[in-house]
Image 1 (cartoon, rainbow, N blue to C red):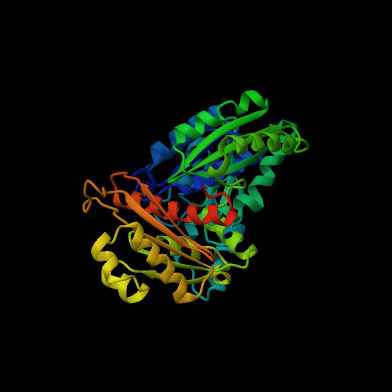
Image 2: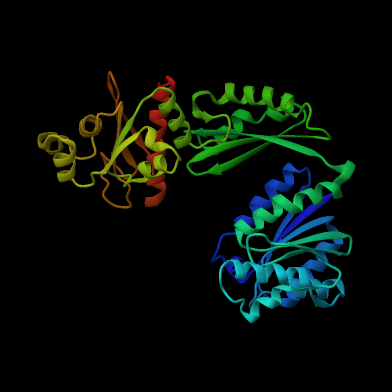
Length: 417
């Protein structure tokens, strides 16, 4: 059986909003063993909606449609579905009661326009919405069973996971294919090189499917295993993952798809170590990533965006003579920055960055994309220079932050070159 996903709404069609729903749904369907063959997107146009629903009904077995179930005049999914099915719209009393109850719990009177959300195709089966006003519904059109869900992500996810997937599993029956995957996260190699190093995994391990995902500036290796039973799938995945690890070595920072900041947090906690950060060219990106991890207060002590030379001198204790002689972007400067931030907060490690993010400010000796990273540890201070240039300031800042975090990760894991 094959599946399709249709996202609706002018805000998605025009690019004003990113369609994160389809990616989430696709992942969940693939995990459930349903092959997703196509993603589509249409705007708030009744004729276009009706036509694409009929098209999907003629080629897919299962489809999930998001959006267009709200109370306004541009919410057209229910009407389009009724037209495609040759059905009429009727008020579903159980759906209406759920909507009224939502407003009652909030202590508000239900606007008249919200009654429209209970107006659904007569042949539909309602999917009640426990966290919002828009009910979903199930309707067979052509050979396809359609699941219509709200476009609000947290409402869609709740209804998908609690009510829709179990129905899809029943539809799949004996045709259900189980899917397990493993995500291996890397930093420091371009996607083409990663691809070349792991290209033989499918040949060496029959039953494994390879995928690569660029999540700038990191590259993720995805390994998939499918079968009629969950039993044995990990036995397929584990040897393949071990082989990938051998090919990519120290460039792998997680065998489980975790981010650098999560991995670093785990390592710092395990080693009962703490961290202070001084950022210049990264402008707080490193501290932001570290503190995005719940529980980071266990190990994160201090952050300072010491952007100006004066801040480096006054806050971190960098010697004026160091900056005067070597400049702000230099090994000697970042070394003093790292030591300074470590001393300020009495942390186990002090991590510092200084560089040129661009697009201007570079020189032949120090071109745009140059960064120095300093890491002051319990016994030594490590410095590294990197040269990146992606033409865009934010891209440079992102890879600068990852380079600094990866240096810390390698030191904590004892795999520093």
